[in-house]
Image (cartoon, rainbow, N blue to C red):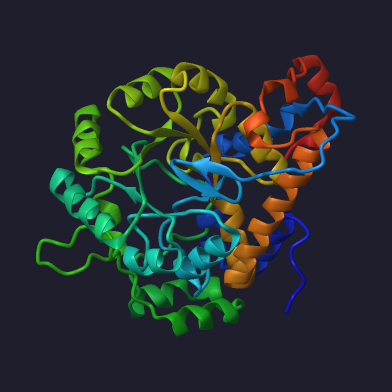
Length: 395
């Protein structure tokens, strides 16, 4: 068995070596100039700790309650679409790793496995809802999520248009046939391990959790993806979804304080502060930079989660000190999956667990119940930051 990762950055490098360039970019890249994707990472480097020494801590508890269920740490595996193209272990492997680490997994509408199969291996499965097909399609997906045993509904609201991608060698095939496979061959000729794993897992790129096509068959990812922006939800739709779903509901993709207030008003249990990893629009602010104002606006009426740029346990502590109840991680677990499959995802989650534990102890905080802004320092002013230089920027 290979040695565990020493860092998330190491997993990122291994993923780049193992994946075809287009698949690696699917995981790693953002839109256009990728400013928002980059800002998500570097913004954490401007949040400094203020450790309390001689705190007399004997026990450190990193567990939290996330939307009514105790988890081992304030971490959720974020929803990402059809990840079996990253590794044959796919969503099932990621769900097993999350269950072993004691954390939830959120699955995408574009997940390549049925929601029930994932909930069978991780009882704390969350379902990400896109309004594909409007209310009738959403009703079908909500019913599927309920019958599968998913605990939380994550309504993603920030995808209303498709913008260009600049840094990409060739687009991913959304269905596999001879012609698309032949066109993709230059990407994979020197990645035979990736290709063999994909072929062993099967080349059927369908979306079993999306509404069916008009003729009743399961849609290909390309078909379902083409409908993604056709019927984006409005606030009346969110009220309707709230009435349809009896469990915890998260509104994902919030970047404004007034939108968090509206989410609370329609009865959402949480919002996820997110710019979609910089993958739907460039120029949006980093998630963590707007987190404090959204926490203040929420005023305890709902929980606030954060999604975007989290790369280490210390980042989780930073976000929670600013008021987040938990964070979602996407790219880090996908890098681990690409490098070592299910084992790699568990390695990444273990890295986060150790980083969270050691950071809490080092700053003199015994638990997340006691964590607040007093454990952080004010951000350095721009002149001081410029003197620090680029060594502190994320790769």
